[in-house]
Image 1 (spheres, rainbow, N blue to C red):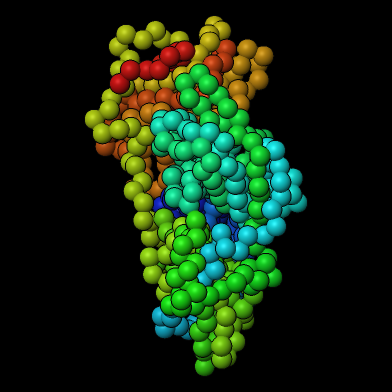
Image 2: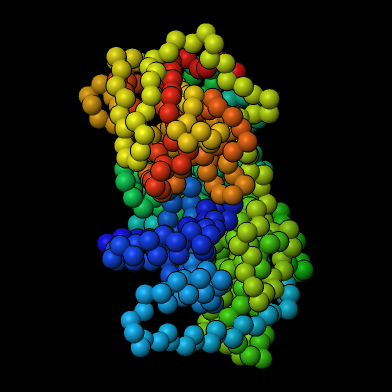
Length: 530
């Protein structure tokens, strides 16, 4: 029994839209059925993570999009796809005598909505909930909050020198830092950003740290995923470390009653011009309406907006983020009504245009950020000529985990170099990789970071090097087919460990495509040279 045969995969913010070939799916299913193996297809029908829900993977931290279309045979909106008909044709081969396929239900009607503008606004700083006083920062769970945003505010009691480091331990998950209302920096947990170099600041200035809660890690050791600022904020000037204290903490929930209660003003009014003098006027709620003479499913186009959530007639549709790949939000027609429909948008980044329209098709594959082809800088090349080899050898051919032991060595930086492949191609591929500590247990991977990979295939899928520690044996690092051996991957373990071996698993498919044959391993306390 195959309990989860994956028809596609889910999307992450800032990564390419995931697709998988229908032929590969039906070939795998056909092979199982010929062997009398039962299966459950995950997903048969794509869906939507409505509201503020949505998971995340870790390591490395990566939050999922609201759309769970999954490139499934039946789409997010319930439409049949080419993959659906490939599956249907294959299943005919295994029908019982006299059995007939059922009719395909008609698709739910789809409408478009002409572009409309949201002209009412409520800046977050002008709509603060009751302050919670606390000597030290605390995660939002301490205030019985699970989702939304949290604002930490304090007054700096003395001057801060230019170049001082503001270190947060840790911000989860997307943070904006303001001093006296001026934006200083944005920190993204996906990129491991937890500190910022500060400008010169006068004593008595107000420090505001606005943290947005994104997807919660939903499996393994990182499942205790506290949100907001999880421990402390420090100012570091050389060897001087000062703990920042005496905070006012404001929690912003995401239930409809809380959102609707804001004091909205017309953006063209004199009242708004006065509000624009606010210390923080970028993160804000926007309100508007649109009128329909008929209802139906549609896709709200959020391309001109920054980062936040959308409510229509009291229903939260989900998250948007300008970086993509998702640019539309699925709007079920059953939540719309003839006549006037109310919409509220929370945008903590700020829109380029306060306009929305309803499309008849989704936009799920529009990235607005550059995705690096490899974890290497332009012209960068790893130099191993003068490095001491920790271990070398030849893997066994075939699927499954393989473990390589060597004499105990201490180090923080690990390099695996593949010298050749079993299938004679240029491609190297690894699904999962563990290092083994002196106690025989796997070394924690939560703080691992890829420092270098000579090649990563990103044209046909997201086969980046961080896939070797993402806890998913179905995902893998794969090199580009026109880049020859040797292939190297360098990992920063986060701190120094005593290591006595490693183990890895190649791609799970039959014949283990791209399996490395001959290899070398290097472990060092200091960084490699490039």
